[in-house]
Length: 165
Image (cartoon, rainbow, N blue to C red):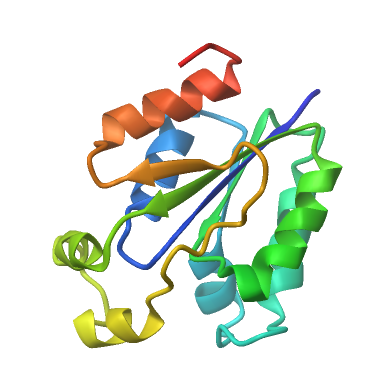
């Protein structure tokens, strides 16, 4: 089985978790979703510091799906300075990799964040904000604020199925 790795990254509140969960539901059974928040905060209760132990576990869980499931989705803030090396190593191991970055301004993420029940607010989001934190890899796709969830999902599903945009 050829497994496609889909990497979805962006700032807190940009829409990456909503998109990833909707994509998993749409793709159906045996779609592996590896969420940075679930691994780091829920499973390990780890801080998001350089070299934190969640980095290796995210990679190991994603690799578990290689050859076993059609699609592995890895999503999270996944800041380039902390997770970039791991994402590059992971990408080299999958036969197909689709990379997406939410290129959404701070004000939009703050508005989107208001629709969710979170234990943090605008002050923390401003502190965590990473401007233009793309991976700068060939084929990296930018998801902008003018796209809605349905359009984002259609774009990724077409890419997974090798259909032109």
